[in-house]
Length: 188
Image 1 (cartoon, rainbow, N blue to C red):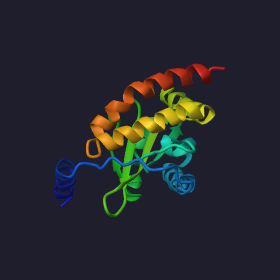
Image 2: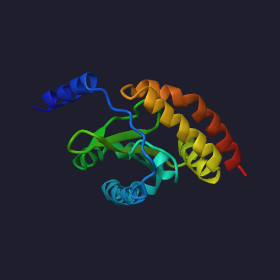
Image 3: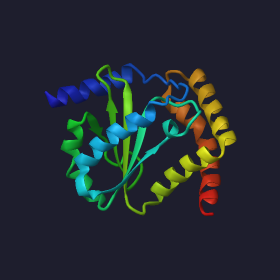
Image 4: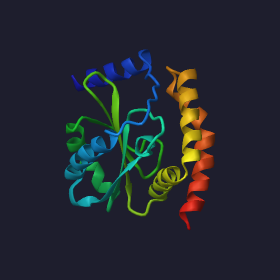
């Protein structure tokens, strides 16, 4: 039965592509982060050092896909793997590193199959933690760059409403540019 569910989910993702939707900032996103981060922290236990709200939903006044991104810093990344079943009971799909070495990634959909949360877990002192936090903080401190990013996301979502890969590829250059600025800015 489990194999059937996995295959059915995989087929659904191929046949029904994820809709790319960006929406105006929603002030309830912070509260949704707070609620979910407490559940994740309880599940991971004493391994957790800190939990951060990242991604576009953490940046005021910009458009975002309505998916809450949670970054968790842990003492020991290997211990996270022992919590996969418990995290799955919260409704998350266990994705492993999913393209970023040293990360543990989980994604959650609501009851109608709409993505609601991403959880990115890294060991403390991972450069990926700094990269994510610097980007978020830079965008908050530099609203003109945040609006540039917001506008690009709106254009890409309108141009590629059913192609998440093209949407992500279209953001890549600006994200890298802003990330470089953010890391330089964060050093001071």
